[in-house]
Amino acid sequence: MYGTALSVVKINVLTVPAEQRETLEKRFAARAGAVESSDGFEWFELLRPVEGTDQYLVYTRWRSEEDFQNWMSGPMQAAHRGEQGGTGEHRRPAASGSTLWSFEVVQQAAPKRG
Image 1 (cartoon, one colour):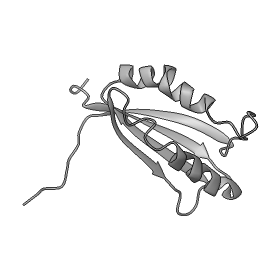
Image 2: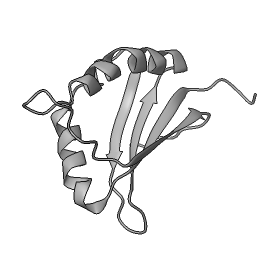
Image 3: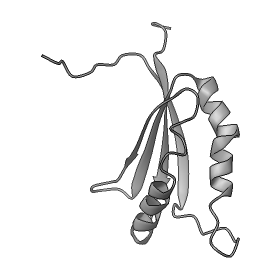
Image 4: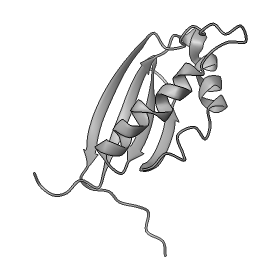
């Protein structure tokens, strides 16, 4: 190992058909704030594909793998159980596939302020 990891990054790669893009984005907007209060949470971004792919990237950064796993086993599952329509039935997923990528941050930089 070259050094101590600064954070862990999780990128959920969601395959989203063109006709489901608006639905996916609205669902994420409706959940705004659901992850921000989680212990160890550092950053979230939903990245929309511009060209050449139908895959959205859901980027989250966490203080540690343990913090991410705690969120996955608690608040994340509760949020996904809440994805129901007005009739109590689960809404159809907007994504047709999902893959989770995991990374450790080993270097980072911020803009210089002068």
